[in-house]
Length: 208
Image (cartoon, rainbow, N blue to C red):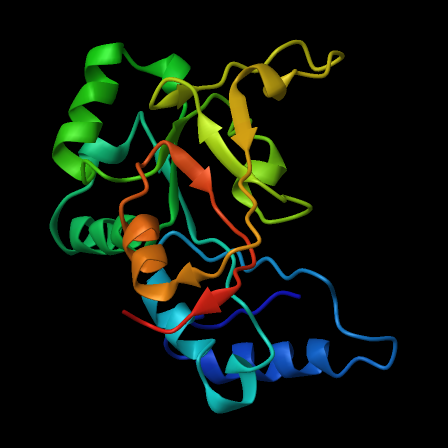
């Protein structure tokens, strides 16, 4: 579905709400997953707020906000556009630094220093080649943990399937004892940036 003649987070925000409601009310049932791809001048935070409208908030769960960085061009951004770029980075759950093969390691280090928070979850890529189960929540049952901090992906021959399992580890934890909600919140808030996915169901007890 293409929304044109305006900005999805401002002038055509109501069009977005209308189309999302139409998708939810399809006769053959709503889609399992919706991906909203914005233009390069959109503010993701405003779209997230739109998803909190009363008619949407109980029917949608926001999975991931992705921001794609062009490693070749980001340092050329200035003025108000730079402020917008910073807002896009601030709103992101995962940041992809793409075209890493077109710049030097020093350039990438400068992007980290000048543009990103130290705790940002970052994946460095060529051709934006990242396994979908890292970016989205499809069939992910465990925490997905990067081995060595910031990860680099290099696209192999297109005729070959890249084995991403060598770049990630997963682990899970189970217990039949109740979990303290406050301690759980503390543990989640302290997860390191190398963890790209964390999810689960918890049997909780009273706050203490």
